[in-house]
Amino acid sequence: MSQMLREAMTPEEFLAWEAKQELKWEFGGFQPVAMVGATLVHVAIQGNIITALNNRLRGEPCRPFG
Image 1 (cartoon, rainbow, N blue to C red):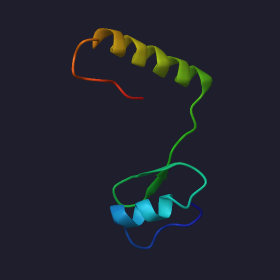
Image 2 (image 1 turned 180 degrees about the horizontal axis):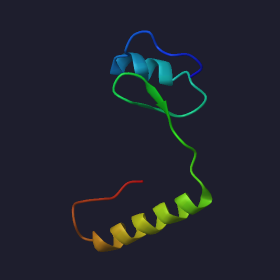
Image 3 (image 1 turned 180 degrees about the vertical axis):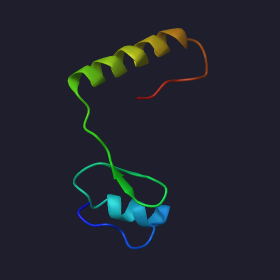
């Protein structure tokens, strides 16, 4: 985002704005915050954590999501 917002965004306004953006954003409570791209190391760690949680939760009603 190249300029400061003059007024706070509502969650609804953010969702409408974010759907039109090329990059990923999250809602920081009153304005968009750019999300960082994941590295290969980050993806590998996330995969290991999800696998460990799936193994631990096997047979339980809970499921982990990335």
